[in-house]
Image (cartoon, rainbow, N blue to C red):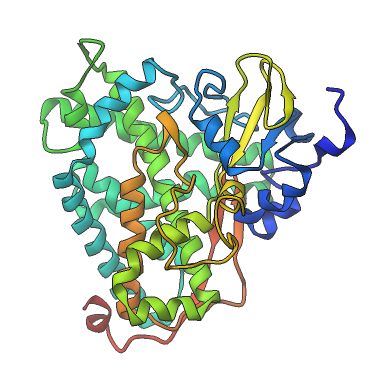
Length: 410
């Protein structure tokens, strides 16, 4: 593509140095390139830098339909329902999912998450140190998923282990054994999750209950029941979408609080601000790079885009747009509801956004009842990248041990 030099940047949202420095702010540092620029990484793609343009792209699935292959391509990806579908087909499947988030179900799931947080704090509190991602952050969405599936809370570790094996372990294998070994490891982890979900689907068909799979087996789209393959597809997507992203949002938030004790003190002084704090921390730590594909030649964000071009919509950059947010690079727990783009916008806005926000709120409330003086350990934060996000892989935490497991569970 023949473009002016000022529109071309070497921006790698997967492994570039700006990403590995602090992922949520990486795209914000490219704002001087203008409303949009062309990246030469991974075959080339457009990057949109402004909030209004990103939101407009999210809200226009006709001009910017879903890009299901990922950037770079994932060899294990499939067309997930409803994530990779476009309107009007997308609407029918999304409508079938909405009742899963009824107030009654959300209240029940909150108790599952809160009890899990307390149990984990009872384990790690007396130790005075923990690996926060594995020992706490990832356990809450795993427990949430357990609740959705109607499985005993004691089984949440199964999902935590599978999520860790799929998302984090391949990076370690790649460093030690090479990329082919990492791909093989991810393929095995992917199959393990799919085998588990297919087995659970068969069990729920025989003995339905008050759970997500049983609910989906009773739903209809286009005046017909969902097929077994569609139920499997949706349930597996809920696992992939609802574990690592939410766990990472919790990890990012506590990493920030560990480095900014004045903000932590605000939560200690007034726990009622947890909902506002959760929303602001989610805005500040937007870490997704969402992809779309241009459906026809057009001019958008001041640049000429051609049919077939891939467009990257970094939520972190949009959430730090000074034209949308006053002093955007400052965390302000008194900020009014911001309508940030961490969960996207338009017809594909994350259906699980209320659950993810709830999990972060519970984490903020429960941790600060027990552990109040945590800091990041000497090893520091380690990030791992994928197609659409860069997330904390390791977050060592050090703190004053609580006197007993009883204190941690209070």
